[in-house]
Image 1 (cartoon, rainbow, N blue to C red):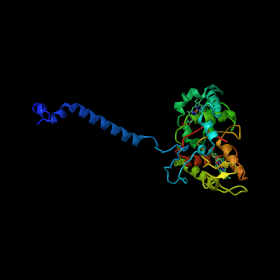
Image 2: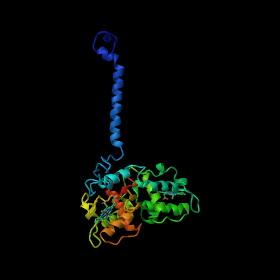
Image 3: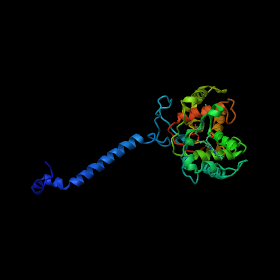
Image 4: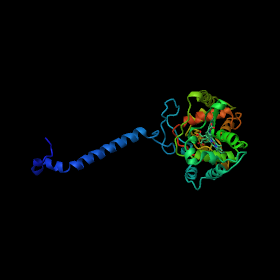
Amino acid sequence: MNFCSQQYQAHSIKAHFCDFAFLRNLLAFLSLMVVVWVISAFIFSAPSFAGNGRDKSIIPRDKTNPLSNLWSGYYYSTKDIQALQKNRAENPGFKYVTEGAQLWEQKTGTTQKSCAKCHGKPSVSMDEAGARYPQYYAPLKRLINLEQRINLCRKTYQGAKSFEYESKELLSLTAFVRSQARARPVRVKIDGFAKPFFEKGKAFYYQRRGQLDMSCANCHENNYGKQLRSTVLSQGQANGFPSYRVAWQKIGSLHRRFQGCNKLVRAKPYAYGAEYYVNLELYLYWRGTGLEVETPGVRD
Ligand code: HEC
Ligand code: HEC
């Protein structure tokens, strides 16, 4: 028998419920929607890393990562340097990003095509490329990094000369493209064709070298957080590059930093863009999986 029939409505307490039946159902429906929303947000949220690595560490998801907590180099910087990086108007790296934006629009080469002509809005077309380079490039059967990808487009699609590595133009365009992925978590591909190159990068990382006979790991894995002369050692993460360095008085590539670290232990540095360095770059980005892209970072 219908619960809300007329005879009930007149007298019983249940009648009150009947009056509110519609409201009750609505309420039940709404709460169900909230539950569904919460559950789906939980399941579908892009990698739910707990921190950002700047002021809260990230626990790497991949248990083969030798680091138990990931920290961006930002975390180990002085308060002054952090303030410079954070403030877009004062971050000296953004001057290069702005120049990169101009180059993006410039028609050049035999085809007189701009990057924008093919790629359109950079915030859409380049929103995640900066978070997943270096990557395997089949025609060359090896990895290419972002600088090399940009130069490939210069040569093959614009009919223009490659920019020299570490030139202001290449640094600016790289910083511009990578900055489109700012705040996105680093996520590089290390399986499939990329695997052997990843393994080479890893071997390079742990190899002792130079007169001091030290590996990258000796400083950045075993001693981060400790003082080395006047600086605090970081985990040597790649997520802020190209970065502006006060010591350089300009922006510089990750490979320039590699050369500097090689020289620190009095080892022979490799050339910019060398395959050794690109493999190392992939390995380093993988170690920082989940850290947010911070390009242009600022360091002292
Ligand atoms: C003798 C110690 C030492 C060794 C060995 C060393 N580095 Fe460094 N590295 C430093 C110092 C000092 C800095 C500047 C402060 C910092 O970020 O640790 C630095 C900075 C870096 C940075 C910049 C981090 C940032 O957030 O800006 C990267 C990347 C890096 N190192 C990678 C490497 C790699 C790769 C190797 C191995 C080829 C290596 N380092 C070997 C001392 C070392
Ligand atoms: C004539 C069209 C054309 C022009 C001009 C061009 N590109 Fe490209 N670009 C492409 C195509 C097509 C691809 C796809 C990949 C391939 O070639 O394998 C690509 C790929 C890329 C990628 C990799 C994107 C990804 O998601 O992996 C980057 C970064 C890039 N271009 C940057 C640039 C920049 C910077 C310029 C200007 C200096 C430029 N491109 C000029 C056509 C162009």
